Image: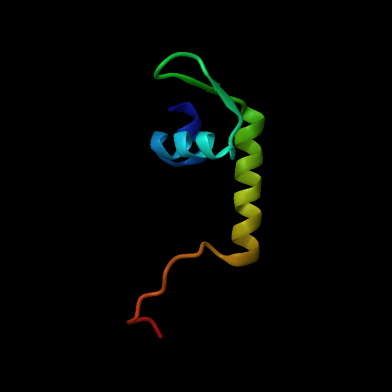
Length: 65
């Protein structure tokens, strides 16, 4: 939950990032993970860089001009 708070996302999304290898961490127990703060900071930095270069990537509505 702390990683999700720092990233501004859900715990489900953090688990997806862990399984995809986009966050570094290890399993402490069946329900608990340890995620490095450096990995969180790196993930945030890469996200910010992508947004600056390409935008957030939201789908355009057919009603938008």
